[in-house]
Image 1 (tube, rainbow, N blue to C red):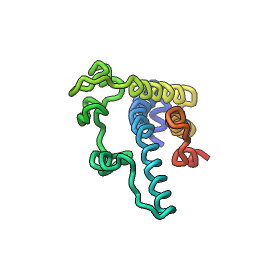
Image 2: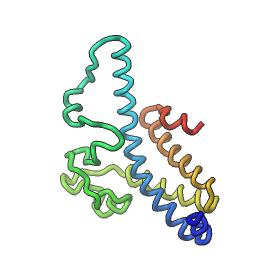
Image 3: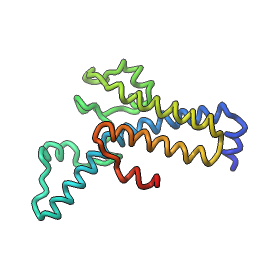
Image 4: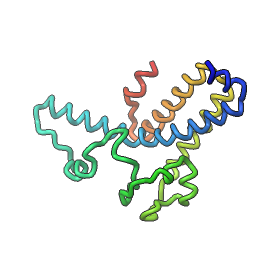
Length: 172
């Protein structure tokens, strides 16, 4: 209860914590939005092959398999989609790194999509609004998770016309 009391006593601290947390979660949401549909499609493909009792060969699979032997929400590490440059920690600070790097990869100077800092910023702003409106309560924590889930669902739906059960079912 100590943390809730501290955050209740200082609305500025609560807003700051929630905005920073929202920025960090927004960075992770970019990973979820990109990788989760790919992971699901691979799983569905594997299940179909098992059901039909055929070889599980993914089109272009040799190239993808060699590039990403392990592909989940944790691995491979963040990298430039153009040159595969591994993103260093200082290049992965939400919004600030994008501004510092001028929206370009530090290695190949290829353009980084504005979508990445936009998702981080929207997540941070919405997290701050939730905290401002509801204060330091358990409801705020629940609504933050709901907000982040909805951001991911909106983006995945926009890209793939898909609402993954992995996100929607826990919301029920």
